[in-house]
Length: 336
Ligand code: WQD
Image (cartoon, rainbow, N blue to C red; front, side, top):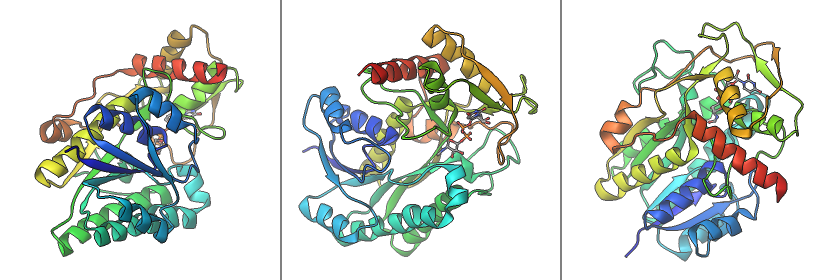
């Protein structure tokens, strides 16, 4: 009998790629999503990739009766929670919205799970919980120093999970601290599809490559890095999705709680990505040096050893693959 997983926010960028990998691994999967940062037609494209119907309930984690109705309809072996707001800059402007969606929404979900007798959850966290690096690469025991309301909301949820398990040992959870997700599915049918002007580097470069934006603004070229631009640990979204499959399997097979970095251990600069994207799209991409973005730090990247040792997870795909799959996706999207 196939195990059944509930994906909250499963129509989104990382959720949709995780849906595909879960189906490929033989799970039954149900999605809930309010489509606030995704498109309804993702269901058709997921059906095309996975060659079968996609079950999506439209609704919000802030709606307790909606959550109760989902859990009343069928049993789930575990939940993977993606439904959250994730823009650092926006969180500084709207801390209350971020607390409500990311913290209250998550506690609503946990209460609905408890009431339905479902006690396994994989939680989407982020490397920005570490704040200014005291040492690099970031290991999971690096102190937590969230700066933005977004990062604080993730620390709050991680703490809630720890305290919940201390109060009731029936719970097991996987906290996955993402580094910088990038790239798209090989089919070019799903990928990052931001509603407005992207905050993140790769989707911004993608819109320069398609001509939707005039040039890339390089936020500072005077950082303490080899070429002066910011260095980050970009991880292919398909690798990231596979990490979620390994995490949820660990919970189902062993109820083994874990807190892990999901990164590659390799840092790339803004110029590294720009050059790689130029190779992918076959064009020279214009850029301008702009002032540093408030809150940005020079460089961070993961120590990926714990995920390797504990889950057997290792990222397989490099920067060129991230840029090529992103380009294939955005150029198909533009022509569709
Ligand atoms: C990467 C580098 C910028 C845009 C954020 C969140 C993190 C996670 C990933 C949610 C930096 C530079 C960027 C641009 C640029 N999100 N840059 N021009 O800031 O490392 O991480 O997104 O989980 O939580 O903090 O990613 O892609 O915004 O920036 O020069 O137009 O690219 O300065 O050095 P970041 P990013």
